[in-house]
Image (cartoon, rainbow, N blue to C red; front, side, top):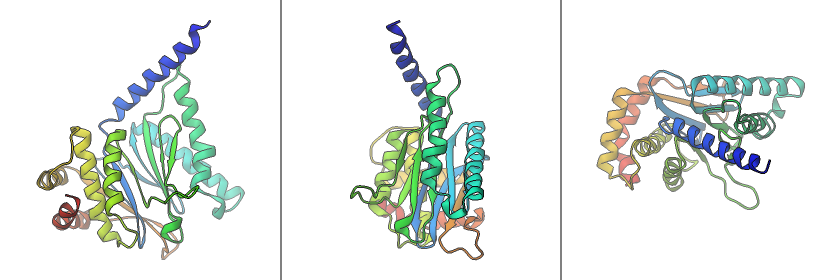
Length: 267
């Protein structure tokens, strides 16, 4: 009988290792506050990674497509039910995560007889100003990280998800040093693309600081084979719909044109 708790702990540890291995190669996702709202960016081949959840809430996710879709639909249903029973103003990202998704993920992860969710998610909620923007990273085990602001802490005006904690930390370090809420969304595209490239390089090879030339070469190579996916949650949308996917053609040219300035800044 005494062995049972230890077997459970060992099983959970094995599940964690398995999930981390499955997520390791995922294409990173980055988001940042800007003058117009919140910009989200990633690159991929075919499957979408960025989604609208509710009026002012968006989600980006890496992992198994089936698990992402199941959680996306669950988040939409929770938000829609809350908006219907109460009001659209009562739908908040914190409530959606803490009382809806987090218990579901935690229960699935700790029930070792069933499969865990192979997913890592980034949520963003646009506010009336940049200080009200919310970024929330949610892990496969139900743990979440909010973008600060509580108990005297400073707000982080960005959020990322990546295949590993090390890779995400590298992206966050860059965004912390360079991003500002005074950026336009056009400027934010270049900043987020740089962060994505650093994350993509880290997911393929764990190494130290990359040289600017290496970053540039890697960026151009990946732009040649992957499709940019960029969405904007507008702060003051006209009309009232805040979610907007940006056209791919213009984004690719914007990224290439901005390579010189942001590679120099990030060196």
